Length: 95
Image 1: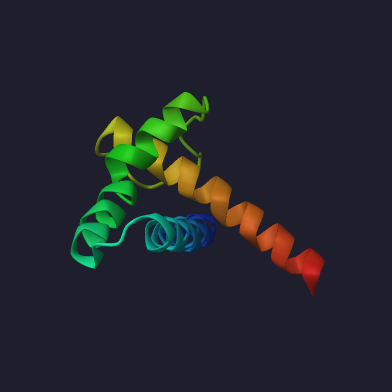
Image 2 (image 1 turned 135 degrees about the vertical axis):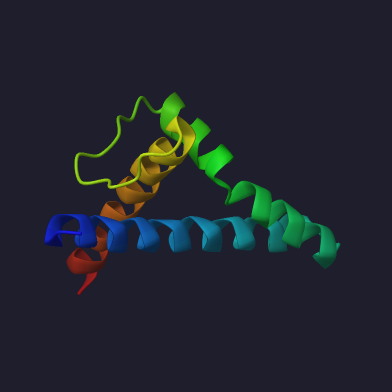
C-alpha cells in the first residue's frame, strides 16, 4: 500500500466514524428502545446504505481506493472519504 492509499484509508475511516456518530446521535434522539437503536445504527452504518447514498450522490470510486470487491463497497468508501474530507477541512478552519 502506497502513501496515497494509506491516507485514503485513514480518511475513509474518519468519515465512517463521523457518519456512525451522527447515526447514533439521531437514534438517541428519536428511538427510546436502546436495543433496537443499536440495530438501526448498525444498518445505517452499513456498506449497503453508504454505497446507496454514494450512488445517489453520483460519486465515483476514488483513484486511491485499493478495494476491488463490490460496487457498493467502493461507493461506500467514496462517500466516507468525502465526509472525512469535509470533517478535516472544517476542523482546520475551526482551529
